Amino acid sequence: MWKLRTYLAPYRWQAIFGAFFKFIEVICELSLPSFMALIVDRGVKHHDQAFVWHYGLIMMGMALLGLASASVCQYLAARSAQGYGTDLRRALFKKITKMSYQQQDQFGTATLTTRLTNDVNQLQLWIAMLIRQVSRAPFIIIGALIMAFTLDWHLALILLVATPILAFVVYWLTKKMAPLYRHYQRQLDRLSSLVKENLGGVRVIRAFAKTKAEKTKFTNENDDITQTGLRIGLLSALYNPLTATVVNLMIVVILWNSGARVNAGTLAQGTVLAFINYVNMILAAILMLSNLVILMTKAMASGERVQQILATEIADDATAVAQMTVDLDSPQTVQMTDVDFYFPDETGQRGEPVLRRLNFAINRDESIGIIGGTGSGKSTLLNLLPRFYNATNGKIMIFGKEQQQYSLWQLRQLFAEVPQDTTLFTGTVASNLRWSNPQATDEQLWQALTTAQVADFIRQQPALLQAPVERGGRNFSGGQRQRLTIARALVKQAPLLLLDDATSALDYLTEAHFLKAVKQASWQKNIFLVTQRIGTVAHCDRVLVLKNGEIVGFDTHDQLLKTNQFYQELVASQLDQDKVGESNGSL
Image (cartoon, rainbow, N blue to C red; front, side):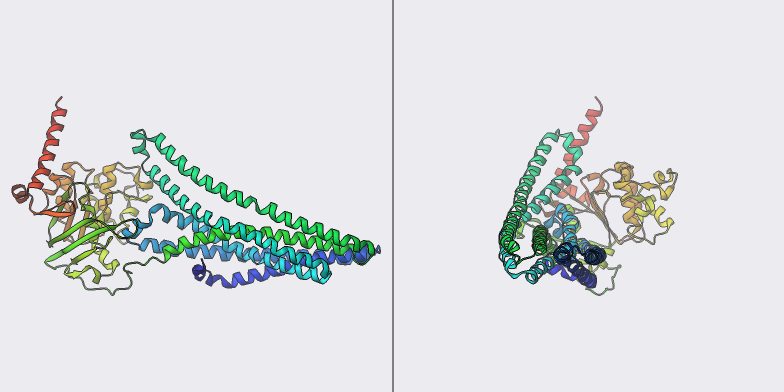
């Protein structure tokens, strides 16, 4: 948490002045019992009404000054905490967006979300309390002891002995609770992951009648968090009784020692009242300090989690490499040489290979179909090209230059990608299409929509390009969403187009029209099309066949049909399925 102090630096003066005004408030508050002792011992005892009014007005003035100081402190603390939280959240979000797919996979979406929201909120709350209360509690304890010694040093020794006992109680309980808070945060991550998974797959859960099983799983996770929270609550509940016991025993000892002296006339009654007030102030400060220690424990756990993300090294900063001249007329656009890729396991070590010994070269103006069984590495291969994942071994050339010679920004400007998941954002059709090219004209948008075979549908909308898009594009069908995401990629007019099973929701005729239209785009150099359909790759110039992460064929569709046994099996399996469909349809 200490490493995150740099985000408080722009607000250090607000924090310093906030603590200063809190100090003024404490001085005002500490002076009140002493004035009360004067009023009792001199004004009330001698029936001096003028004396009582005089010091009563002084007490009222001190109270108002304390109130004003507290208000200023609250304002400055809020400004500092909110600014700190905003800057930290911005830095955290920036780091997360710069992470590679691989780094994001290692953390997981659920924990990244929790750290960006809940953990930053904990730190923000701690900063606010640090300025408003952490500065107050020590001032109160130290100031009360000093004021007590000025009144009567004999009774002050009782306070001096009892205060370390109170501090030990706070230390012992905090030591017990710190690991529980860290465990609680980890459990919260798991619960967030489970909730996200259930919400995203609610249709699948209901389709397989797994609602009860998922409820049981959620209940178990929730109960685990509850048990941890109860243990934390049990320890927290010990704070008040333990500290109150010590303080009340202190008051009993004070009254026992002061009673005889008051009767003997060597100790004034007002002094005893002031002492009890100071004891109560110390008790309140200790209780406040105990709550702050609990909050600090939470903040420390959150700080470690946030710092873990901020300390993650980004493989390549897009601003760190100078812009290069790209030869878009290079005869070979993409080339892989001895490329391997491994996903890391849970320990961060190299896991099972996903892609092995990839060697191929793509010529300019070629369309490449990529086909293979489930889990053969088709999508991963596409993700290696724009460096969403970094190859473990080997060399990848883009337009005649190694990948690493490009900045990430420049490299990804060469690619337009349509992922498997059709994600649209709340807004309009035009705002979604302009994600890849904010300066695109309406004419370019219509051109992309026409190529993606969705222009006719948009023309039927009353608002045309300003037609609303609801969250996730849920007001469109699956095929419409898929064609809109294709159009969004086409608006970018990047030379390399990556289609990751992006035509799966399209019928064969629409898909054929789209592939024919996209090949005619003037800016297009290559199309990489991942699919499970043999009929789709048949439209491509060459077909790359993957099996268990290895290339087992790379040639034209017709040549592979003649020479490649695995490709023949894929074709045969799909022909058999088509025959089954035809026989079922004839019943």
